[in-house]
Length: 221
Image (cartoon, rainbow, N blue to C red; front, side):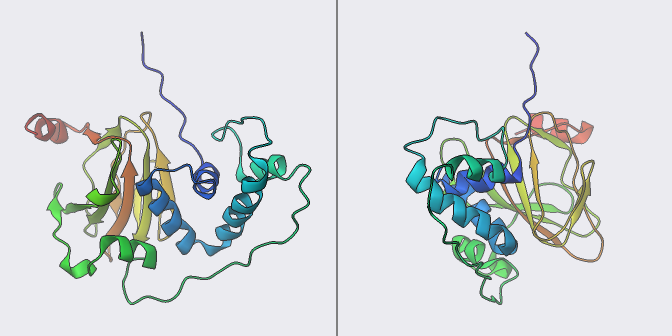
């Protein structure tokens, strides 16, 4: 029976799941880091968290993947009298190039990280203490003008850019941008010239190399 690729969820879905406490630890850290870099989205997450705690026990089950955060809020707020809204909290400045939440999780300066080579100009550092149930969490470092080996995914992949930028078939992703991909995506992210690109990526399963050289390399793993 042929395999049918899934549709990748939206960023709204990720924020909603985070606010409702439904994400595994690695994905929750990624969502928290995303909100730190995009504080304008924090208001939506706070509203879902406030309203959801009151009304989820009274609501019918819904498909989070199929609706936006605004649609979820409309459903959760139906019949609710809560009117207070949480202020948008800007992140505190930090000397680290990583956002504060990610800096705390890594537990060491970026300059002290023992990177593992993953291709010409591409390196990774695993955050194994956040990995469970097959979830893989890693920092990715891509040198200017270099690329992550071409790959696809056996499950979901969420990649947040924290420094620099990269481009692939889906477009350009800079600081604070989040790319969500699934097993229908086969791509080769290439870092822009001028600045090292650093990303935080969370995947449901190890990526599968698909380029000619990558396939040879993977067969040796």
